[in-house]
Length: 437
Image (cartoon, rainbow, N blue to C red; front, side):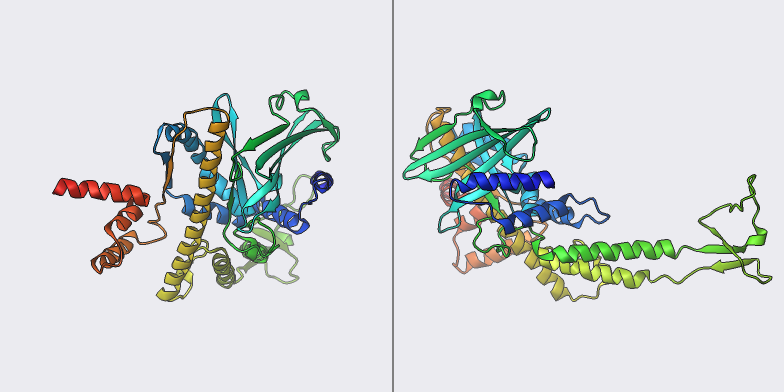
C-alpha cells in the first residue's frame, strides 16, 4: 500500500507537467473496489457479483469482423481477443471499466487488457469519449523497477503517441528517466509516433453504464457494486454471526470435575474437549446436558434481506445471491427484478459492443500504419444469447404480432434473431424471396 501511494504521488508529479493530475476520489474508489474484488472473505460477494454479471453479459456471445480480405485478417486477431472477453468484462464490472489497447508485434495485432489502476484519462470530448490518456507498464529485475508511461493524445489533426521510461531502485516511485533502448523489453518501442488521418483513439474503453456517483465529471465508469459497499460489509458481519451461532450453540455435556480422570502429569484430561466440559457443581449432579436453542432462522432471514438489497443495488435478479425459498415475495416482484436485471445486462452488452467496435477500428488503423494487409471495408456483427435473462420465445411471438400489424418489417426480425446488420438481413431476405418466385 505504501509503494502504491508513492507511485500515485510520482505519477501526479509527472502528469502535472502536462497540466493534469490523477483524480484523488476516483483513485481511492478504484483501490477500494479492487480490494473488495480480491478480498478472500467467507462470502467474497464482490468477486461473485462481478463474475455473475460478466457471465450474464457475455453468455454465448458471438462477434466477428467480415466483409473483405482485410476483414479476414483483422478477424484472426479479433477472435483471439474475444477469448479473454469474459475475464476482461469481469474486471470491468469490478473496477468500473477496462482498456483494450491493440499493438503490433511480428506482423500480428495483439491486444493488451489494461485495468483501472494503470490507466489515467487526461481529456475527453462532449460525448464522454476519452481522447487523451496515459497508460502505465511496469516490470522488475532484481531490485530495479522499470516503468513505461505511454500517452495517446490528439494534437490538431495529428494523433500522437509518446513513450517515456523510468528506472527506480526503490520500486515505490518513478525514479530517473532512461532511454527505451536501455531496456531489452522496450527497446523496439518508438518514443514518439505521429499519425495522420486518425479519427478515434487507438484504444477502446469498456465502461460500466451506471452513473458515476463518485465524480460526476469523470469519464471513468464505476464498479457494479459501488453503491452497495456498506451492504457487502453488513452481509459479511451477518454471516459471521450465523457461523458464531452454530459454533457457540454446539451441544455439550457438562461433567463434574470429580469424574474426570487425570493424565500422567496429574492434569485433568477430557476425552473430547469439544463435547465434554468440566463443571464444579457443588452438588450430587455428575452430568448436565446443555443443548441451547439456536437463532439460526432469524439470522438467516436477516442475511437474506441484506442479500436481496445487494441484488437490487447491483442489478441482479432476486435469487441470484439470496434464497428465494425463504422470502415471501409476489410473482410481480420477481418479474420486475428479472426485468431490471435484463435491462442492466443489456446496458452492459451495449457498452461491450461500443468498446469492441472501437477496438476493431483501432486494429484497422494499425493494419494501415504497418501495411499488414490490403485495404478493404469490413463490418462487425454481434450476437448475445439472452435466453437466461429473457424469454426469447415470448419476445419472438411479440415481434411476429408486430409484423402482422405492419409495425415492423421482416428484415428487422431477421436482423434481431440472427444478430445481422440491416443491410445483410435485407439482402438475405431478398435472396429467399427470389428463390420462392
